[in-house]
Image (cartoon, rainbow, N blue to C red):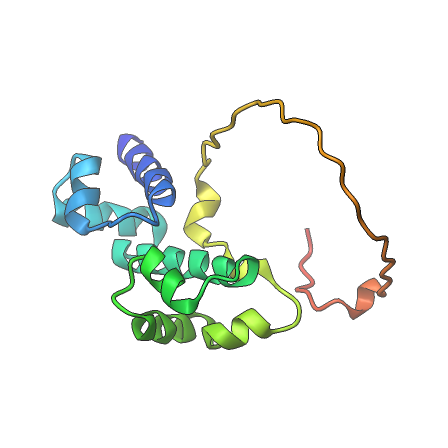
Length: 159
């Protein structure tokens, strides 16, 4: 149980530090275990190696940034500590079967591909702050969108 809690805590810590320089040495030191032992623990509890987990999560964050920002591929690559834009693009294509440019332009967005299975077992402790913001007048446009639910592309899972 203690080891499982350490792995969960490290996953939370990794999630909070994905845009920082992470290495096996740093992560193992944070866990209190040797590099070798922590890698074994991590794989035993998550089913994936630590290196693959960090890479997959950084790629997921990069994919998210592609859709919600106008940041260049180079800026996103550097933010998530890829050696180059080419390295990011190659890893992105391998994980998502689409280039980053195509991903950014494609119609629709299925964010389920960004959720990593190892995170489903972890309760992320959200940090929040209650604040009062000054009032601001907003303007908007109404748009009605109707689509038959049977036309949606989703997995039909029984609950």
